[in-house]
Image 1 (cartoon, rainbow, N blue to C red):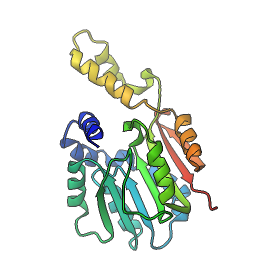
Image 2: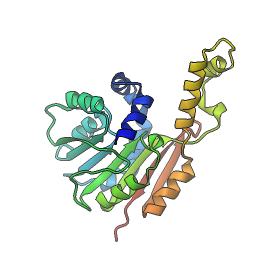
Image 3: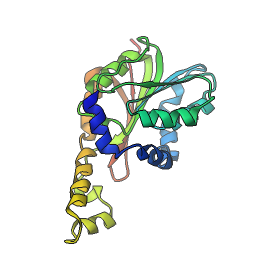
Length: 230
């Protein structure tokens, strides 16, 4: 857990990242996200679902779930204390919400096998050295026929990754060398896995891929996968 905390502290740049996550939520959970959800995830959700958000951050997905599925159990998981603190503030008083701390590289949660209807992970896997154990554990938690929704950065050429303004700064001889290093480090972090890598890992764990949808010049992908019925 210590190694993961150090990795995320470096990536997030501290507790202020929780506020940034709140501000940028509309970009992650936009109309296209919910259309994909409605098509490939919503049909398997029962009236009283158990829904699990891996890497919940400030917990705004749980808030939306509580509005859409008011009889549910909503479990949000994160490792960073400041994320869980922010989520606790946002979700205070909402029935059915549970917030848990665990390292997603080897997640330990009080969930029974075959007990979860839907699991989601939104822009989390690219931060992980290896997501296979997480995917295996998620597979075990899901009910037969339950679904997993993944959204993440995927590998793209460097010319596609940077916007025009950042590209201009990168090649400006006056740009600070620490800023150059920071930009390239983020490029490497966000280019860990290709779409085919994620699909390969899901199939290796046992999932059936229901649909996948690249977007934003194929820098991101949405994936719906299902645990087989038998």
